Length: 271
Image 1 (cartoon, one colour):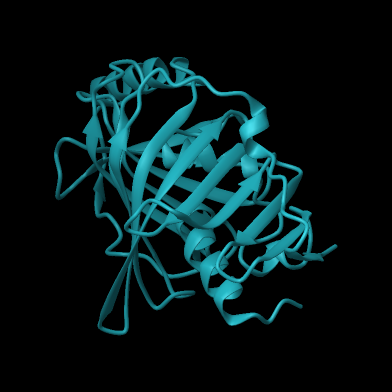
Image 2: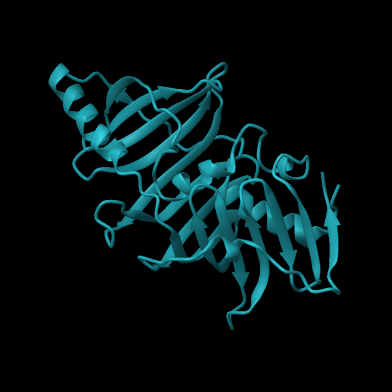
């Protein structure tokens, strides 16, 4: 068990924002039945959306905002991601100096606190990692969630409904083999997802609820949401990820997702 308060706080902020948390959600949608023609049109446009694989790199300046217990805290940083499962996030100070870094290649992770010269390394199936990310949630799911997309796993739509409060949205329901139910708030006209709710199939408990807005159209085939709002009881508040600046057509190698730690750093390995 890692008990350093800053390390645990930083990991919680990052992973709750970027990964999957157990918790409650915002107001759940009220739905209505669709006509046959409305349903067919929605499914056709959703199929077109899914055909755009969007496997390019994601490179952005971001701000993580955490609002809980009446207080707001903002953390600027830089995010780089390379499908299927390479991810790097660095929290920076006002001068752009790296305060902390988290990297993963989908198999292992490294979390570094530069202010205290400390690091934690280990596999993503470790008990430490699973303190924040439920077992069965994979790193390769993170990048699609950040981009307002769906992971490459097979998506089998079982039902389609309209939204009673927002006529622009349809709700596509999908159940996966791991016992999870996806409720996808899709805008057929814009070709983007505005909300994605993940529920436990057995008891209906909300695992994840993400709302997407302010899509950037720098890439017309694969627009990126500039704001993601995540809610969950694990933090007793609201977490927001804002993409302040998106760098289109970035190219970087997997090498940036490997960290060479200075010799004087204290490194803790977890299993």
